[in-house]
Length: 426
Ligand code: GLY
Image (cartoon, rainbow, N blue to C red; front, side):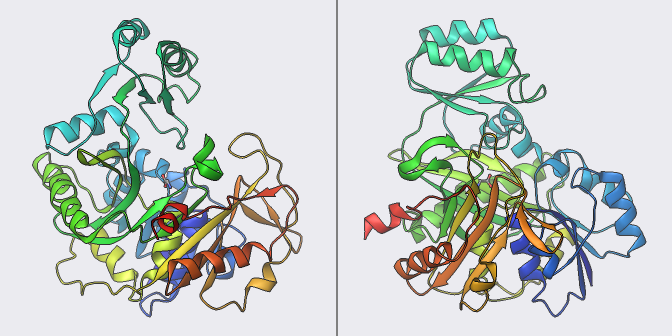
């Protein structure tokens, strides 16, 4: 099989790495890829949002499976375009991707299908929002309605903060014009967050192990929100009983909801959940694998990834053998550029990558990296995902941090407390 992976971050490196181990996969292409992916796949200079170019490429190269990594191409209708042209692609339709692409649509969907989530109200007029917020009790969460790279969620402690959030989103359009058309005002839920994943063919689904992300930039969950500064799997907070509950109350309900509404969904349902004293609730859904969660989940997959993605894309997972997972734990520490998630410099030479090559059960997944002459340099905010697997979480943490000691680039920073919640429980 010839496979095309769309995207160029750490998640896509992990997907390419795992697909490259499949005996069913003959050649992998990645659009646009990065300097790490280039050692496993042919990187092609097409951006993830260039739908027509991706279609032309897949047709001309006889690609038998395309796997979409990021959310933006899903929202831009890439899967619909490929399917209209008879090509096999992993990812939900544009309508299905609204689960991530519109927070108000997702909230209404959850209400329609009795999926547990926080109370909320939706506003498009700043005046209506302000008169509601004036009388509300705090804290409250104000969310931009569309894709905002994880940045459009603002926790507000009083009316003045909420009014500022309304101004930033609806008036100044800080998170883009489409994300700034509506806001969702939501009750603030307290508890531990976990990320859960189901791969579905639209009828049945396969559950992947859960993970816990670390969204804040700095230790102790302080500082601005990022795309994710590290992850580990499995998080002990999600007990086997709770996993059962997630399947019944969330994944079953989402899939039967899609079926009832005639939505073609062949891809990942990513539930961003919170474990509150009033039970599990959905904070948000995403329509693709998590980043950096994928970087800790795929090293735990012992069996082949290809039949899972191909079966889902074809709309038939009924004959799939249950995936086999390694025991133990995996931990990923994200190395980022100074200034991220704000402004940062690029083109800093990355030293030490060769020292990580022989470290057993250690994986360096590249995110924002590129070649400059024959050197590898930084090209993004999140640069590398240093991942380690071991039989115990403690050892996996230690080994992931051993990896950080090998790498150097100007301005690099990373959180020193990945997996702290799980370690504190012990
Ligand atoms: N790790 C958060 C996300 O993938 O959206």
